[in-house]
Structure formats: structure tokens, C-alpha cells
Length: 105
Image (tube, rainbow, N blue to C red; front, side):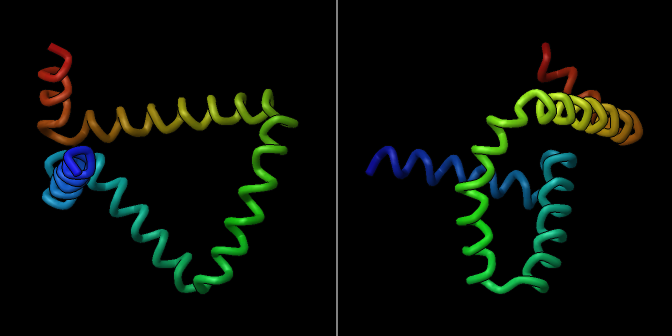
């Protein structure tokens, strides 16, 4: 019960932090994710999503092993581009850079 309480409190703190926009970047990520999920929900119904999830569970690990080097290369490119975009956004938003510097200290 104590372990469940710790996990529940941690999850509630995260949800509160995201919905009350304590960290703007994380809240924007959540909003974009929810916005994209509205389109997924409009196109697919629940059973279709379950069938697709089952297919992906069994096919993705095989493809990841087979094409590991190519996947790692493109994931690295995507990670670098995402990092540069986030840095540009953080440079233009006031207060975020100061917060990051305080965390590093």
C-alpha cells in the first residue's frame, strides 16, 4: 500500500505540474500530444487500435534488430533537430533559461 501511495503521489504531482503549466515546454508537449490523439481517435475506434498495437508489438522488435544501425542514425538526426528546436524556443521564451540555469547550479 505504501509503494502504491508513493507512485500515486508522484503521478499526481506530475499531472498537476503539467496542467498548471509550471514547466512551459512539458505542458506544450502534453498539449500537442493530446491534440494529435484527437485526430487518432477520430480516425480509429478502440478495437482497431488494439489490433494495430498487437501487430506492432510482434513486428517492431524484429525490425529494430534487423535495421538497428539505420534506425540509430535517423533517431540521432531527429534528436539533434529536436534539441535545436527546443533550444530556439527556450531562447525566445522569457524565464525558461533562467530556470534551467538555477537547476544546473
